[in-house]
Image (cartoon, rainbow, N blue to C red; front, side, top):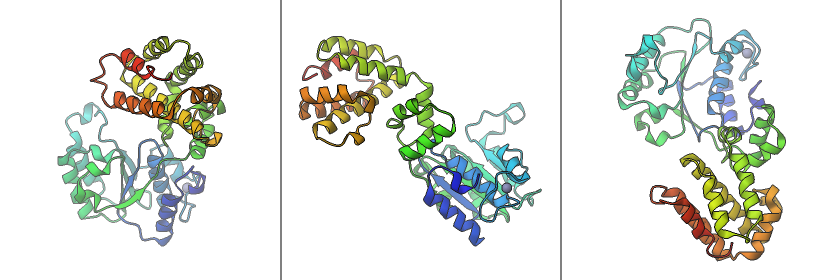
Length: 328
Ligand SMILES: [Zn+2]
């Protein structure tokens, strides 16, 4: 599975391939981008390409080296998770101990590969003591060792660490890329289409939505709205009944935001192709004929406020009722 078989990320992958072909490989990289878009997969792929027995600037995914890295049993490639719960042997090690052990390990030449590769996930979670200790490794690079830091929030990392790494930016995935990944995982096309617009460019979020009760709740909201304006207060009551926890509330409010966004787009006469909730287009179009633009914008602002201030919204049922006091 060479680089061109990875969904999306054409620019950063091209950059990595060019670096491999040039042979001028920086000793430290920082892969940045939102969660769940494939940064870790790209880092593992890069580790494969650095050590592939067949590839030249790429990886074959079938040689012994690629296969060992795939199974994370290659002696020269390791991943570190700062948040990882230590096992009994390493209980007292902590992050600083783990970094010191890493520094001792990379002092030696690769055992069987061409390069030692250390992938540090969630690098922003390294505490300041561990990050400062790690800085020494970046300041005094070790031959044949490549460090790949992965972060979704590099702004919170030590600037001295960030400045010593070659930055590689990964952008949120497009709908086509996410649906391609979900298809590869054997996800049903219809379910995939329903979560796409709510995935915010992250395949991890798309999978989370598919595994949660998001789709069934979404279908319930569509059903309640199809009965409007018959019973506004009942609808508010039914919607508040769908909120069982903070996560459920955030998902419901985000979904309602996309719903009202769609109503606004239909009002503006925009093409159906830009509508997120295509399967509810009929109900959304009906709502667009009854609502006013000002009313819809007001609802969107209120939803945003509810979502940003959950602790101030004592009663979500009353909050949702206030959404329906004008229009539907
Ligand atoms: Zn290979």
